[in-house]
Length: 80
Image (cartoon, rainbow, N blue to C red; front, side, top):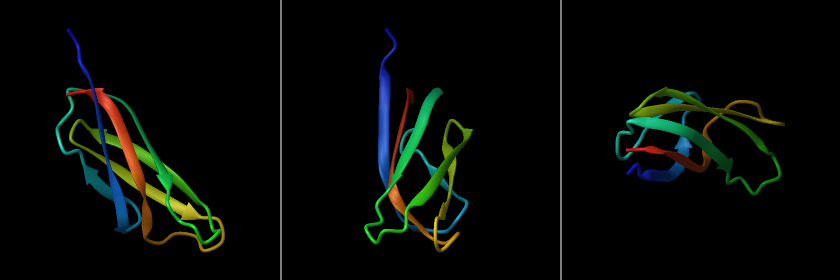
């Protein structure tokens, strides 16, 4: 039986275009998603780029301030 495994975490003051390692390596990754936690009214356009079964790259650009450090939450779903 195949068991779907969710993994999640926080993005706290992370430099633009940084790598995030999964807590547990996946055999297969189906999806990675994230959302902004800024409450100051300057939304973040967030991108998650799959690198391999152990990590992904996160980048983002604020509408008014452009690039900078990133705060948010992420979730990934796959088979571990």
